[in-house]
Image 1 (cartoon, rainbow, N blue to C red):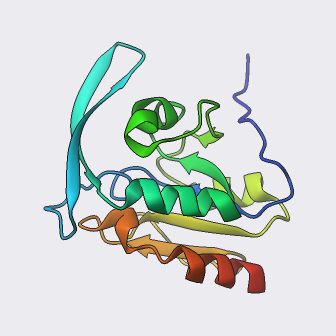
Image 2: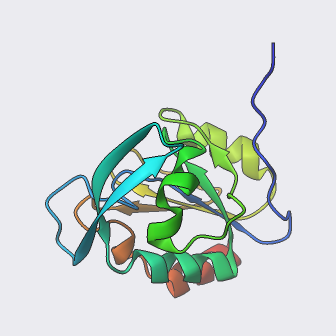
Length: 156
């Protein structure tokens, strides 16, 4: 039986683990400006989502300081589905297809690298070995202060 093994990051930069629901698209009525987009994956399905207008800028700023890993039930579909809307690189970022038990998956993947977990406040849990950034599902990634996150992770 084959076991899924996600691609590795550079091993040099800290890792930002990004949720999708409540982070990249909003599950609640938006408290921030949004762009409504139709996202698709592999030509098999499509869905209309509200993406914070600030998302492409926040993602680019995170990618400058961190290696990005998707941590979501969206799995590898996150990069494919949101690539155009977020201006993502063609080469997909690694993904951890996890809906429950995300903290254990983060710890196992990050090993000794510093990390930040940016996700919907409904699914995050406290951790002393990394930075957890819980977001309102009405604001998502628009509420992230990338400079503060990078500073906090560099001090850890």
